[in-house]
Length: 396
Ligand SMILES: *Cc1c(COP(=O)(O)O)cnc(C)c1O
Image 1 (cartoon, protein in one colour):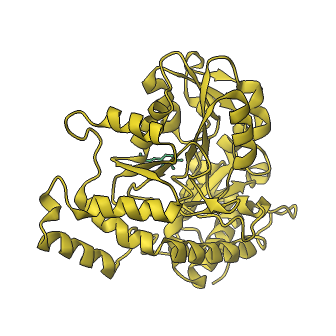
Image 2 (cartoon, rainbow, N blue to C red):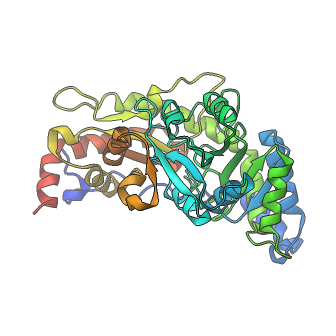
C-alpha cells in the first residue's frame, strides 16, 4: 500500500473500512456467565453469589483486605474521598491533566481542587511539585495512572505520611498493572477501579474501592448503606466481570507486546525535519519485572503541529476516518474550569502542553495482530503526508 494514497478524510478508502475492533470482545466465557445468571435467576435478584465471589476474587488478585463494589469509577472516587473524611472546605490535590470527574468529585463534596503540574518525562502528576501544593486544609491527594504510564507511589506515600494526608490511587486506566512490585491501586490508602464500558474489565458500568484500612471501608459502607445499597453493582455485572478478571493478566501481557510493536513502528514515522511525529509515553518509562503497565489507552505525544499547523483534534479526526480509534487526550482541568473553582500551583506549563499535544489510542486494537498495529503507522503516514491538504480543507 503506497503512502501517497488519499487519506479517508479527503475521500480516499479507509485503511480499516470496518472501523476499530469492537469492545467488549466476543467471549464465550461471558455467554457462559450470563447463562448461569439465567439458570440460578441471579440476573433478577438483589443478592446472589456473584457480587460476593467477585469481591473475594478482587481481594485475592490485589492482595487487599477490603473491596467495596459500586456503580461506577466516578462514584468510587467520591466514596474514596468520603472514606478518608474529605469534607466541605478541605482541599484535594490532583494533577492539572487528569480525568474530569476527579476534579468534579472534589467539588461535589464541597472541597477545593488544587491543581499541580505534570512531569514532562512521564506526563503524570509531578510528585516533586506536590509539597508546594499542601496547605493546612489539604486532606487528600488523588493520584491517577494515565494512558499506560504511572506515578511513582513510594515518594507520594512518604510525602503524604509526613504531612498526614490521605492518598487515593486511581487505577481505572491501569487495572491489573504491577507498579513497583504491587498491583496498581494498592499502594495508596484507598484504590479505585472502573468497570465502565470502555475499560479493561467491563460490565458497561461499575466500579470498586479497595483499601487495607477497616475504618476507611467502614466509613464508605456507612455512606453507601441507607437501609438499601445507594450505589450498587448488580449480580449480573459481577457475573460478567469474574471471567474477565481471570484473564486480565494474560490480556495485559498481550497488550503490552502489541505496544512494543507499535513503538517500533512509530519510530519509523518522522517529520520532514527528522523529528518523531508521535512520541510514545511508555518509551520514557522504566519497564522491568517490578513495573508492568496496563494499557487502557496508549498515550502519544503528537508533534506534527510544528511543521504543518494541524492540531491534535484534526489529526485524531483524520485517523478515525481511517478506522483507527485515536482521540485527543483530556483537556487540562485549569483550562476548562472557572478560576473560582480551584487553586493552582505554579504555571502548569506542562499541563498546557498535554492539553494541546496528547493523543490516546484506545486499547481494543492491542488484542488484534501485528497487521493491525502496522496499519496504525500506515494510517499516520498517510495523514502526515497529506497534512497540508487536510489542514486546508478543514479551514475552508
Ligand atoms: C474511566 C475513569 C474513571 C471512572 O470512570 P467511570 O466511567 O465513572 O467508571 C476514573 N478515573 C479515570 C482516570 C478514568 O479513566
